[in-house]
Image 1 (spheres, rainbow, N blue to C red):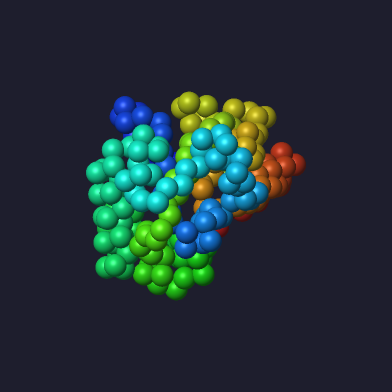
Image 2 (image 1 turned 135 degrees about the vertical axis):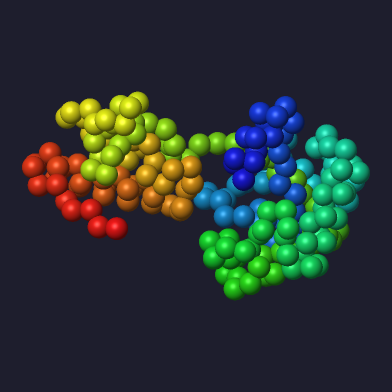
Length: 196
C-alpha cells in the first residue's frame, strides 16, 4: 500500500489518502493499530470524519462525491463477487491471518449502513530500507560490489536483507542478529558455511 501511495504522490495526485469504513466494527477503527487510535483526538485534529452517507462523507473530506461513490460501489461489487481484482485482498495467507479468515471471500465485506467514516492515512517509515549494502557475512561492499576490508553492518544500519518488502514484525531484529552473528564469526576467522 505504501508503494502505491508513494507512486500516486510522485505522479502529482496529491498526498491525501482516506481509509473509508462503516460501523460494522462498532464504529471503531477496523484495522490493527497498536496503540489503538483515539477517535475523539483524531476527530478534533480533523483526521477522522463521520457522515450519514458516502456523498456527505466525500464533501466533508474534500473528495468528489461521484468519485467516492464509484470507488465504494466498485469495492462493494468485489465484496459481492468474493474477489478483489484491484488489490487481491485475501488471496495471500498473510492477509487472511489478520482476519482469522480461511478464504479470500471472508476478507471482503461491503461498506454500508447508517454511518460511514473516513480516517486520514499518511505514508510513514517502519524500520529502514536504506543503509550499507552487505555481503553474505555482513561485510559492507562498495559501489562495485567489492568488500571494504574490516567494515561490517547489520540490522537497520545495513540495507534490508528482505529487499523492498517487509515480511513482518521482527524482520529487522532477526536479520540483524543473524547477520551480526555471521559477521563476528568471519571476524574471528571462523566464517559460517552457506547452505542453499
